[in-house]
Length: 628
Image (cartoon, rainbow, N blue to C red; front, top):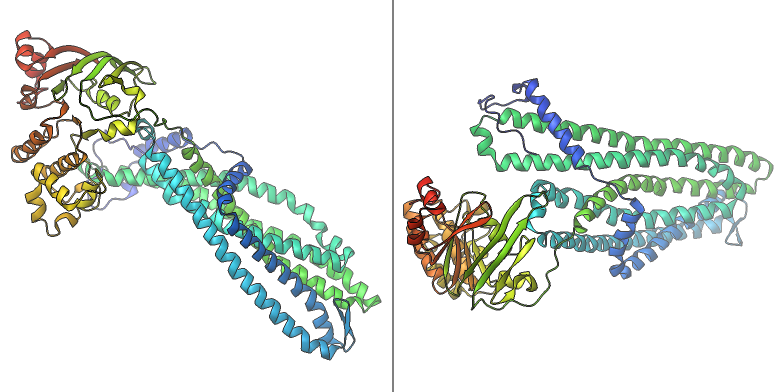
């Protein structure tokens, strides 16, 4: 969330409290939080539809599901056996009368020798079945979640830059760190619980019905009365889960943004405002969580009270029946044992259902990203650029109606160096985005060796091009890791050769671990010149036929520029080059200079020709848009 940093001021002390932020400044923070929250509130889909979609991810692992189901059936059968055997056992202990077990009449003493062994056997079977069922369902859940995470990450990797411009990185990160664990619980724990506990409940209910139908009706007459509270609790919990997870996503986004820009926060004395915004979002999340915990906490006691009422009715009726017919005592004890054994799985199902609702809400959020459309990467394979690159009447218009390029045309002969010059917003970066397939033109075309760029597979075009941005992008791994990003199977000899050509070999050899030296997050452990030379070495490894440069030396000091410039000259040699120029040295050496203004080509020619015309190019030189 973007806190209004344009307001300069506030406490600059090292100890910052939310009290340091005046109420007048706190209110806008809170209002902004509410406004953003309302704008990006998730649109829920029917939970059954989401759960069916999750189950489709389960289908490839149906053998694990079948094994878990069989183990759950064994657990349910063991629970029913417990209930069935308890009545005869207690009757044998309390009386000396013959007892009927499975149609066989046995004396009490004989039964006391056999039944304990049977109970131990049932316990062993149940324990083994529970172990197998839990292990199989955990394995199933982990595989399903691995597939879902891979689908999500693969879909994100295929999205164009515009997708990420409309979404905050912290919000997307929360999908992996916050939503995925909730869905994982819904798949692993919930699916396992629904099988094991659900089958136990069904088995014990059948046992109760077989033992005595009248007791069954009296005991479970309260069940219809539980439907209304359960339904209301579920609806309320789902709404709260949407709010709490959305708020947690905003909190993650806010934290990530403020920590990434901490130097700016501190430089402008914005710690108090940052803390106030964090407090406002955190308080909203806590309110949602308190409501969620209240609903979850009241569900189980409510069901328990209703359940005890049914048991009380059964005991009242059963004791009166036993007074008239003592033979019913064993059946009553078995029935009560079955009812008591129901408590555990019913409570587990109730608790699981609460967590499943949170998991389904998280799954809705994940599927909204998985379902995001990405441009298909289809077409012919692009060959290395050996001929001309032609831009013909190229137009780019954004969704809000802004025109970035309008009728841009120029030709880049094979091996030529073309400089793009223009003020900020002239359309230079947009042109690069079109060539790299990040933006699709709304008119005109680009020809690659005479072939329309739109008919070539984007991935194959990118494989023939190397892009070196103004700010080098390094990953928080080692030097080797960053270089291999360009060519994963490159040998050490090829890595060192690329470093040599980029004039980076000397400083890499001086690093304590050489190629294995960690570069830090975004290359923070290296200087600007070192980062840029590593980026050039990575471009060398690509062996590109087209080189796109966003003047990588413009932000460097003189010493670093000299080292990087030597590497650039080697990289550009023998290749077709388009460079966004900010340095006069780059412009002067170009074979062709294309001057853009307002998305249009207003001039084109060599440096000497354009200076002599005294047009827009000469004006940019005078304004300092092209530095000496």
